[in-house]
Length: 279
Ligand SMILES: [Zn+2]
Image 1 (cartoon, helix red, strand yellow):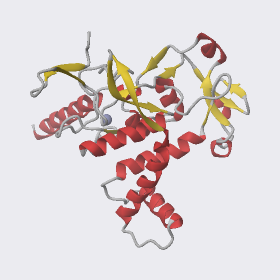
Image 2 (tube, helix red, strand yellow; image 1 turned 180 degrees about the vertical axis):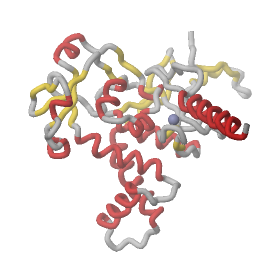
Image 3 (cartoon, helix red, strand yellow; image 1 turned 180 degrees about the horizontal axis):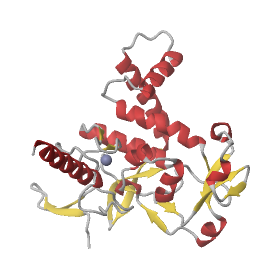
């Protein structure tokens, strides 16, 4: 059965035409990313079971040696799940996760894996956080700390520029995106006997930039949730709060967003308090 296609008739020839529901802007994703049961930090190739053991050591000085990977046992067990990254908002998740382990536990290692068991450097995190902010600042005012840092960076890269601040941020995003998207590869895939536009990714980082590109394509800009401060991609024009959490297949785990509920409950409590004071 052809699931992802619609049957039509060619008006001129009368032949049956099959159109696959994938396009260049919404391609079939060939790449699947693995998730392991358990991860650990590695310092100088030795596993650290508890990140608190690093207390007192300056994390920043360790970044090149501090790595994340599945534990030996989890590696031997194999992945507990492999998933299609385009069912998730990797771009948003990269920005919103509290730390690299929180991200990796859910989405797996972001960069191409090496060694046995595979490990990714913590340096990844230092690089990607400001960049995802750069995504956010596309089209918004550059008055934040990161915005200022990016502006400074562009001044270093292009000393004689006379760009406005907002243009500097866009220049930076452009430069980074084009560099990063070397890991996005367009392909053709056979699906149910029909050829469809497809895409392959080298890393989750490439997925994030690809999703950023899709947002540009649709004219969608990131919004910030007033309750938790996280970024989200609005599904409709009036959406004010971040959407409900989803699993790796893109299924919503709750009907409503926790943030929306929390916000509404607090507003209700505040109104009741005001009423009591008046009475
Ligand atoms: Zn929120």
